[in-house]
Image 1 (cartoon, helix red, strand yellow):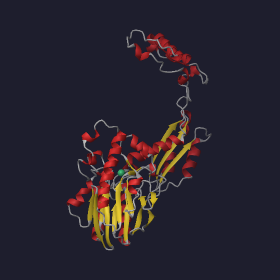
Image 2 (tube, helix red, strand yellow):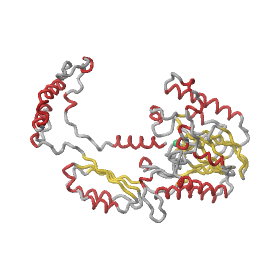
Image 3 (cartoon, rainbow, N blue to C red):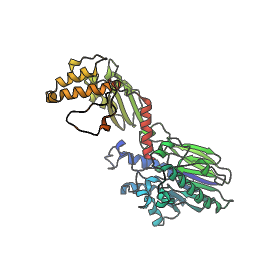
Length: 454
Ligand SMILES: [Mn+2]
C-alpha cells in the first residue's frame, strides 16, 4: 500500500486585493495565508509520513510569479526533499507561459535536479520507487491544441471539431501509455483537466473556446487505482470505481469559492483497492453581506444589524447593499466602516435600485404611464442647446415608436437597408426599473468568475 497526499490549485500569489500589508513582515496577508495553508499540507505529508506527494497543477496565478512568491512556494516543497518524500509537480494551465510555448514555471525543479522531484509537463509514465514500494504515475498536464495538433490538422475545422480531434489524439496517446504499464503495480493518473461531468458549467467553458473537456470514459478505467485531478477549485468526487477526485484549491482564491470547504486528499493506493479521505483545511472565511434596504424606514440601522448578524471577524468581507438614491443621505459611511472594522479586509458596494426613482425633471412628475413622446418633449424644452434639433428629434422619435420603416433623418443620405427595421418598439421604450435582487444573475456572475480562474 502506498500512501499519497494529493493537493492541487495552490494559486499562490493570487487574491492580493483581499489582503492587506502586514507591517511586521512587509508581505500581503493573503500571501501569508496561502503560505500557512500550503505549510499545513506539507506538515501533514511529513507527519504521516506519506510515501508520495502529488500536486495537480496551477501553482501560481500565472507562469511568471513574483520572486518572493516563487520562493515561498519552493520553501514549502523543499521540506519534502529534506523528508525524502518523492513529489510530482504537474503543470496546469496557469503554469504554462504563452500556451506552453514559453515553458512552464515548475520546470525549474527539473533543471535544478531537485532530488525526488518529477515535473509533469507532458504525457508520460513515471515509475516511482517509494518507501512502500513502486508506483506508476501517468502525468497528463493541461493540454493545449498545439500539444497534440498541428496547424494543418485544424485548418477549416470548427471549435467543436478541433476539440473532438484533440480528444481522439489524447485517447490514442493515453492508450499507448496504458499498454506499457506494469499491471502488477498500483497506478495513478495525475491530470490537470476539465471533465465532462465536473460541476461549473463545462459546456460554457467549451463554448467560449478556452479549453476542452475530457470525457469521463477516458479516465474511468480499471487500469487506474486512483485518478488525481486538478483544475476545478471545488472539491468533488466524480467516481468511486476507480476514485476520480478533484481536491479543489487549498485556499479561497476569490468570492466564488466563499461557501466551499478547502482541503487536500490522503489516499491509500493499492492495486484494485484504494481508499481516500478529504482533509479539510482551516482557511480564512469569505463573507458576503447582501442587504436590500430600499424599502426600509431606518436604512442605516438595518444595515448595521445585518453586519452585526454576520461572523465577520478576521474574514474577507464584502457588503453589497441596495437602496434608493433619496436614501443616500441617511447612510453615514463612517459608521459602516466602524462596524466592518473587525473584518480582515472589506469592500462596500452600493447599488441604487432605480436611477429613476427621483425624477430629474420635476415637470415630469412620477406618473407611471408617462407618454415617452411627452417626456422627450419636456426634456428637450429644458435643453436650449438642442432647440435647433428638436423638430428632427421629435419626428424621429415618433417614427421609431410608431414602427415606421421609411423614416430618414433629414440631411443624411444612407443606404435604404440600414433603416428598414424599427430599432425600438413602443413597449421597449417604457421605463423599467432594474431588478437588482436577481439571485440567478448573481450566481451566474460568480460562476463566471470561477471559470476565469480555472
Ligand atoms: Mn487550472
